[in-house]
Image (tube, rainbow, N blue to C red):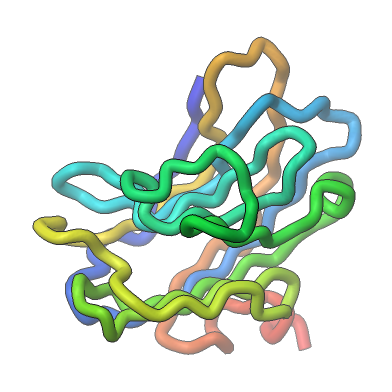
Length: 172
């Protein structure tokens, strides 16, 4: 069943924030057919503007605008952005940092860093029309599997600067 926790509400039109979190998936957990581990979701229609997805045998992936780019395969096209190779996904901590300007306009952006490396540098809309705000959710969301899913989350933050959220910078 889905286990999600909502964090950091009220990212309104034109707001710019940094987000950081860490997660760990143990080696001894057999992968589910698919699992979502976090998302930036919108009020009003609850569509996800950014979804963080993992399918068995595929890379951990970011998907832009789930309603428009509802792709279950992370190919690096059609709004999908491979972030962590399947072979490097389990058995180690991963640090995610997202810098976003939330807007329906084309002057928005999202930059996604994985373990300190810029993996996504997207420019364009970061909210869809008619949505009041964007909020961050994390946890395990999956369907259609009887297998146990285990994910540990830590260091979940939102701030106005990278230095406030990036655990790699905070530990220095």
